[in-house]
Length: 196
Image (cartoon, rainbow, N blue to C red; front, side, top):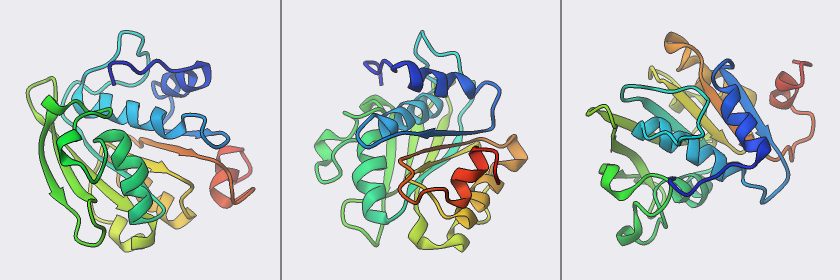
């Protein structure tokens, strides 16, 4: 996290968080979308914002979710970028969230080396909470919680997106999406292009 320096499109995406409750970073493959999302989530979870940061800030601990299309892609992309190599616990804390901020991890039951949730030290002195989700769990597994934000890495089905966004409604609608539009002009893409 301390070494992350966004390029222009990533910086614009982060900055837009100050005034936009829903944001999408849509770009081609291997252009830093997941890195961008992980950096932002790590800053919100820890309260350790970079000196260049001009986006939304949380001055207290947060409750966040992060997910992708399957449990395996959540582990291999989202979890790896936030925590570190999934199969090597000795290296957890070498990705965006620093090791000294990782307080506790709970393993998922369905995917080897996957995490269900993590507690993280926030700079305010409190504890942030992060849960990992997958779209394959279905909409019902995205119900019930009140959250500060949801990160969708890879394009979600519309029903998962709206359910996840609903989790943030009580605290001011806050979601980020990072994906390549492999499904073309889907319902979710059209929401952000002003066609939905």
